[in-house]
Length: 113
Length: 114
Image 1 (cartoon, one colour):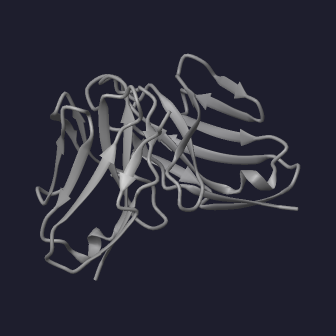
Image 2: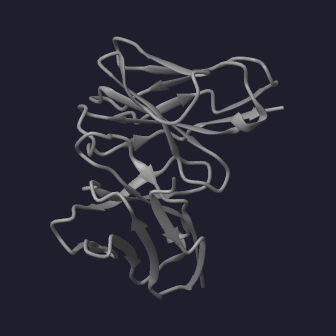
């Protein structure tokens, strides 16, 4: 069962543009939503995370928007740069009971000059 | 401060063989989780070790087993390898057993089963 659905599968954005990646979840017990960035040949690295008690979190050029009622959250990358080209994974976990981190299927982001 | 280290980086095995992958957690971390990442997919949780015990397990058969040592390092063992076991195996470490403790991933072991 796919508990975290991620879209799009791939995304091409021009340098300086805004990259937007969307995720939707089913399990209402999820209470922590991290985003990971993965470069080829490397393991995923934590980028930014949000809890459902806030609707938005910003760190530099990266912003998470969270809609609890719709069970959706998204990653916005402002002023996208070629160095942002990577695969991005959303994930979700519940701090109670089921402790496994559930990942989305990933979005391959390419920033073109 | 060394991050999560995994060995070997690449491995080629034949169907039916057994394999052992190793992981040393980030300094100060005591919890190790293992993930399988198939090509083009997100990581799938295999299991988590804390205090040398398996705490949680994902939907993987008993052919997948693990161990955590007193120094917090960990091994993942896979028996009777199948072609479908070909994947990137990721180790992640964290501090404490809280579910939302940030995970730090290693660069993985690429296993190819022929």
